[in-house]
Length: 496
Image (tube, rainbow, N blue to C red):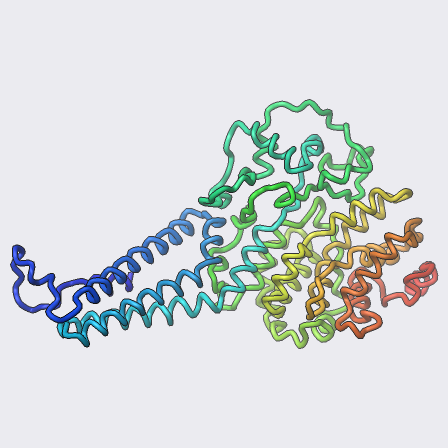
């Protein structure tokens, strides 16, 4: 509004004499080169109009809960405000030249444009540029692939993008909510409907609820969490990963409905005034990756303590650790019903996002490290001799794997990687399970070596000691077993 007001003041005739409406002389510049004056006015008015239009669109998106559209606009705000500032500065330069060439009545216009240009730069452009990395990470955290619990009878509809395109065309009713609306695009053939809207809009099912294959076909993007579907007490649901791999368009997770509006701004604050960028990113991640049984996820920080994670992390000394108490109440309000371990994991993830450099967070989210590695899940469930309790441990250790991958992420250009396999094996050992039959298979050994390398703080390290100790203790072991690559029964006896 301030820019629009400045443009109106600037465009008004600079005269104290009563104006005759039939006299056009008031619209004629008194000095040389009147085109400079009118070009300056035109640029200022057009800029103010466009700025008002975009700002109004952003306000409407927020007030109407069009969060996907609002987050899309926010990604380009720094470029938009830079363009506005440049156009106003150019208009100001033109009126300066007009003044020099004899249009001495435009002193008020010079002052108005100088004020508007300074305001656009200081109040809008500079903060937008400072927040641009966080805004991008917020988009990635809230609009990434989602892991959704779906009814067992729906699992055969999961699969390739072509299969989803076919199913989505049969949707009879639009059940979308405001936060799903992506906005306007050009030449975008992605699926706009939400997965759950598609599944629940189809009226007839030709598949029996017990018609379930094991192992699950790899192209379905369904996680095998080790549930025994032959047991009548087992929930008749599966965990489905969906999003860009199936050509769904990005959309903000529907979990945003439970998030306070104060956390949705480009500079989020808690009710007590604490900075909460990390909390907002964590809520976006946790709204998409819970799986079927979040109450069973293992993250036992009690014996390890927070000091070890803070002192040995790649991002030590972790200055945001002082926010732990302030964040705990906020996160407990969101996830207290799931359990203490889940709250602890959510709290640690929030603090890590605060301490982790924005570029590293972008790399971590781009690599989709918030989710279990679906390809590893495919590998394990296709492995001969795999037991259901081993796949169950693979799921229950997933949050510890997520935290470890971010806490001990290598700060170089090496791509981040989750230690899913290491954490699965550590949890099995903590629960005194026998050595898996697939433990020394070539693909498993290769994967384990890749996870070890990804957790090394530097390329010169021979062993990611701190990361492995933290993972072992978070999963219930007293220490990381020294004979991890060998027969682990002796190490289990030591901790008993």
